[in-house]
Image 1 (cartoon, rainbow, N blue to C red):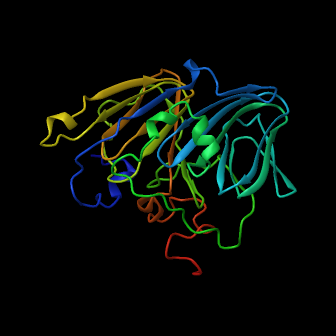
Image 2 (image 1 turned 120 degrees about the vertical axis):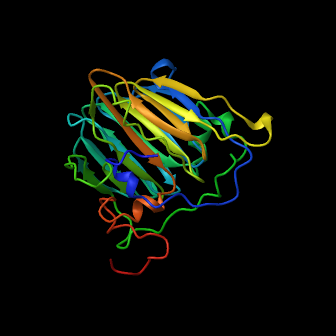
Length: 305
């Protein structure tokens, strides 16, 4: 149920299928109220996960370096602050990446270094088992959650793997939702900064049939409103939730729960939405995925678009 002014109102209706009969809980990880999973000379890092992804949120110290050896698949690097650039070394080649950017790093050996320190968000698929084990909510995913099909990555980039970076400084465009990039494992939507509380008469309750949504709070405070369907079995019912979380935090919203999020602060509020694997419906909207020409959709491998 989108307001008519919301670009998502133009999306095709969710597919119909067998009604879900069991539901997972939402996950709320308030990193600001938790001890970090790692705390060393490089910085402090908090880890949280969904069924198919891991979010590592780091407060890097100046010169902090964060390496992956034999990384199994592509991962994302989000640098939310213009004053915090990075260098990314992959397979012996080093590139400078400006702050206020997103980058995708290929499988293999890689190192992210922040000369000035600052915020660093890395997003991985759940195929990185050492990282899923490090997550504060690892026990919640001891078994496969319902209503989510087995994970499948998307095709590799048409011209092969390399470090790819993109500025977040992308102007809003009428009819386009957010600022969306994807790779072979993930889709990241860096939503615009909101100033002041969200209009309570223009919320956007909606659901996803078969994939989770992760909402990362970068700034301000959000209330996540979540409602699960009723089934004939009373034992499957869950109470509505209205959880208020500040920055940094992640909320993992399970399918097919109805959900919407509301910025609360008088100042700046900002969310980043994360999906793994990428979403088909967003990818099918012309112009929504800003690097779509580099990453084919399933079935489009070997074609020019």
